[in-house]
Image (cartoon, rainbow over all chains, first blue to last red; front, side, top):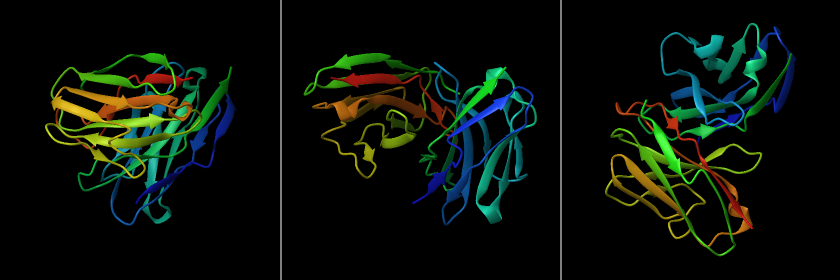
Length: 114
Length: 115
């Protein structure tokens, strides 16, 4: 069975700072990787995803993530954060054989200080 | 992605009662799922709602406690039976969209509080 680790539970940054949120997964086969975001009072939204091809994927709102297979990692990055990025961020993985079962990490709460 | 709505959006229930949560999608979707998000924790998959057949439950979840129906490709229900305070959670349904992709899209969730 797959598992996902997000080591940063709560991150506090000032506006314009650079962001990197860690995500590591454990699974013996090929995976699909996702980052979801949950803004305060809103439902879970897809930020970006990786299925195959270029390991650097770009998502909405200036976010990107890099899949490093050798490290089983899929870290989320943004060069300059905004106050509106304050949210909970979840990394998730599913096996890449049409299983569609998502396993989520515990989430990282990001607080941006104006 | 298909638009998902859930009813009720929130509820406060007494111990020992049951609550049925509805999930409606605005177009036919292949796969539908039910998740639970307990306070301060991440999302955990409860089951896959299969159209026209019994749901497929994950380890730790059983049909007697969480009966699921999926009568067609746009609708599913999850019942939380014989509730206890430990069932207080946000319950979310998701689907893989009209194209049956590997990406899941989530509904707004139902916030359940059990007293």
